[in-house]
Image 1 (cartoon, rainbow, N blue to C red):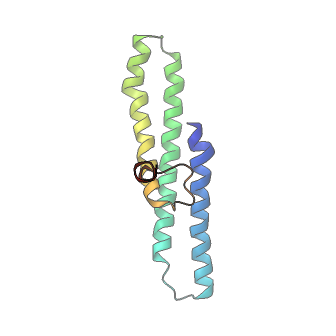
Image 2: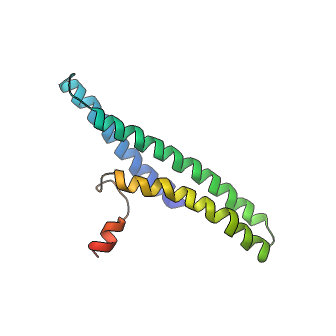
Image 3: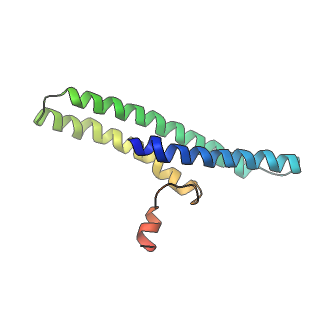
Length: 118
């Protein structure tokens, strides 16, 4: 969970900032320029980051609740039924962001890097 807070979130924020800067600079240089692509990317990236943050909050609460369960079967079932589902919910927006965020901003090797460049 720390990897989202310490690596992904800051990198995604840097990317969204660069998109916002791009929009501002292009519009300043040429007010009639079409910045719809940058705007769409900024909106989608920001939305996915918000979804990831919400999913992280849910996951953290589930992990805290799991810690209150009796060790053994009860805790294992809770992890299987609740925590793993919350992990998947967090992974979904991050996987989508991986396809959008420029490689220079992405904090870890992408699946493509692992498959084709290792």
